[in-house]
Length: 180
Image 1: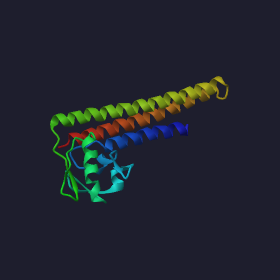
Image 2: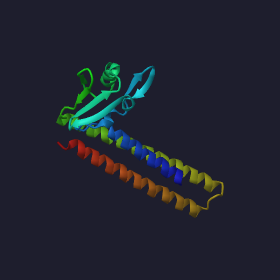
Image 3: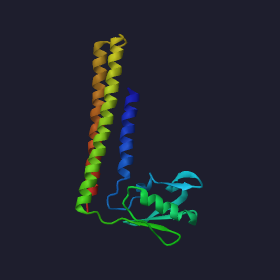
Image 4: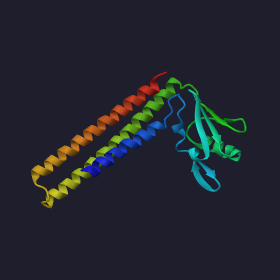
């Protein structure tokens, strides 16, 4: 039972990480988490080659450890799906987050709901796997019918708990995005 709960927790954590990369009009350094830069032939995360800070509410500042990386970092940001244009002064790259339009906010909320639905599907698939395992044990006479029914009820309660948590996360992120 614990292995299935761990898998459900991992689905929740993956959703939290995805939500952290969705920008909501405010500068959040986590939007850069998935960006990698070619650093002496090996792909490296932006955090490992530069200092990232948020000096203002809608600005992210990236200060590479080496000035030679500025062009690489700018190129990586441009090809990412952030929709931001970096500007630099030779030493520091700045990303200015524009105010989100109403249409863009609605698009982001749809995206959040889609990611939430995908997380729910993952949790339901885990429930199916758990129920299949219980049925196999029941057929092999490792579990009685009553024990199998009790285990299935536990799995369903776990599923309900995590689906409710996903719904809550989706609602909170949607409110954050729609707040001006």
